[in-house]
Image 1 (cartoon, one colour):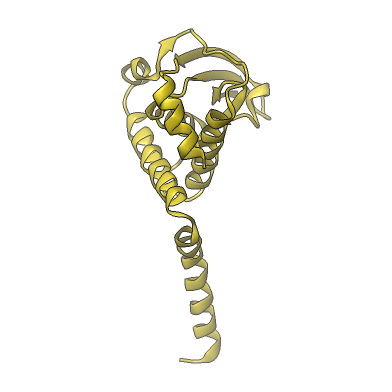
Image 2 (cartoon, rainbow, N blue to C red; image 1 turned 45 degrees about the horizontal axis):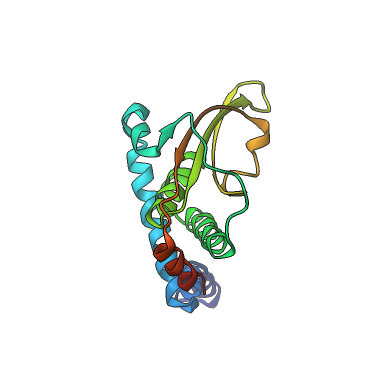
Length: 178
């Protein structure tokens, strides 16, 4: 084997192993969160293969919103970590992880932690004038997914998952945020 093809092969292998090396270098808590995000993105993608009417009841209370005021710092830290995990994991899924997939995955991750959130569905026009749709997720005053494009869309639906936080859960959140 000559030197040039071998060098290209080694370069390609290093490029593919880089995400694994980065993942292994993370603290265990971040690795678990990324794994959870990856799993929830897959679960959401599968759920979206079914008619939306079957998925909608699991998204929360239709046409309701959760409060948009600033949450306690411990809760904000968890929301930020979930947002970062969804963003990072969605770049590496072998399936399409578009806005609705990311929003549903984020909703499920926040629901598991008892943190309230609202999933929004919107429609608008794309650059060519055609119909476009978008989904985004908000928790308190923070947008978890989809914030970069939401202003271009008119909200046509929303689903609220209220907070289930009691003092014991808030204490666990403070510990998880550290």
